[in-house]
Image (tube, rainbow, N blue to C red; front, side, top):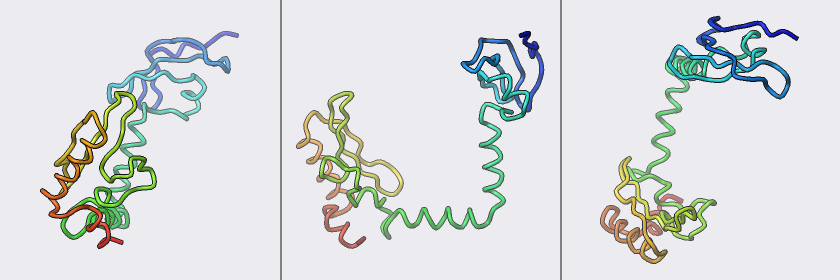
Amino acid sequence: MRVKDLTGEKFGRLTVLMRVGTAKNGNAVWECRCACGHTVSVDGYRLRSGQVRSCGCLRRDVARERAALNPAFKAHQHAHGRDLTNGEGISLNSLVKSKRNKSGVVGVSYNPSNDRWFARLRYRGRYVLLKSCQTFDEAVALRKAAEYQYLGKPTEELAESVR
């Protein structure tokens, strides 16, 4: 079967640069440059049928435009941001232990890829504590010290007021 050369053709925001191979389904795969500058490899059938028209930037742009025009989305977005902090501007995820927490201490986690413990605390939208430690006890001590410094009391007491 002969493959039609799509080099130089435009499909939405994509311009075909060259053929780069064949997909498992037998369709030609084409390398394309998007109008935003990114390069992607796309199945020829998906290009010709209009299923793919960009590297993904088109979807992001359309979603951004729709969100900007949607008053309900904007209202929800602002309300949601307030719901994620308490009255003092402290992120609730810095106060309440999540179901995914495996260390047993809010703001302390373990990273097996580098065999280190991490202590974190977000206060008023920014990290005031983001440290790597060798031991669990060291990370807990850093977290507790930061709680007293920034919050004035341990998170257990603050978390009770949230519940």
